[in-house]
Amino acid sequence: MPWKIVSPHDTKLIQQIAKRASELTNTKYPFAHPEDLVFALRLGHLSMPLDLEALFAAEDDQFAGDVFGIHLNLRLRPGPIFNNNFTPRFARVQT
Image 1 (tube, rainbow, N blue to C red):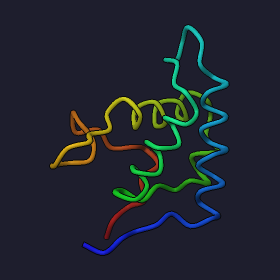
Image 2: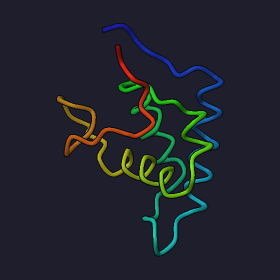
Image 3: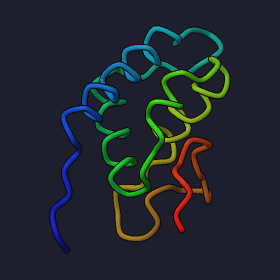
Image 4: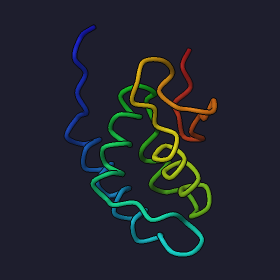
């Protein structure tokens, strides 16, 4: 399997997304450390490319649903990348 990397542009967007998400954590959204979110988003993006610009611009509820869904459903063992058949709203359509 060839190594994949996240581009510098995408890395910057992922860091901005993680920062925004960590600022949303309160009683409505689960707490997640920004570094954990960056890890989950990078791995999720490598496995199922995300439309990072659309995700970053999304309304809070849709934004949080994808970011925290990716974080909570990330699978770190062989098999599908996400548990529970989770698919981010902002996953790029694979054709």
